[in-house]
Length: 258
Image (cartoon, rainbow, N blue to C red; front, side):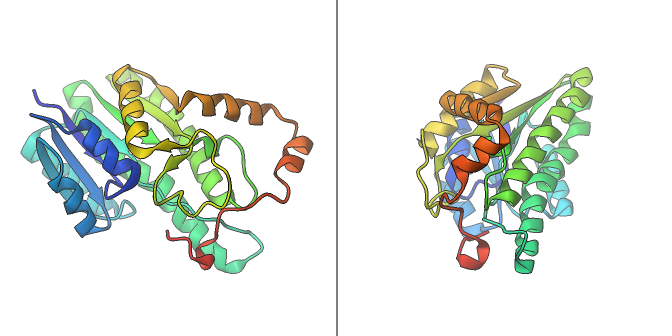
């Protein structure tokens, strides 16, 4: 049977590179994103069979329709990767930041739920499959000025942990992926140093290796896992001092695209 993969947020950056990492002779790769032209451009460069679904992951009905179409045409996917995500700085003191805060949660957390939900019944009936969620090391601790993004990724990590236990009895594997810094349009506007920065194609290959190896939880690159654990162990007072006055992620009102 050909490898069948369904990936959200694949019009650029990590999602596009994940599509390339899984494409190949005989493979069927479905990709989704809001930007139709960019999505079709990525699909045109994929080997094997490429299918595009222009949609927003906050539109659960559109995701359900895409899932039904894919299953009807190609069968149940072997791997579903919830990669779609957005990022922007948010400040609670500013009323205008409530809308981007809500949007970040809707895409990064609710969109992940909506991506997986329409495939679970078919995977359960088949007796297996893999659901992989792209979270972030940013979900380990809350960084000043990035409360919305950090909180959404923390929620994604916890959600995936719960889902893993729910899916285990029916043979569906759940993988939590925590990337560190990856050179993508999402990180291009970050005004601070990004240690262990990976190129998107390198990150995608590493993520695929961890998924294929049967990992349930993986930090990519592994060095960022050590950094994240060290930050988690810092006492609050020291953690707050370390990050006080540091450059912050641009807010949507400052031109950050979400």
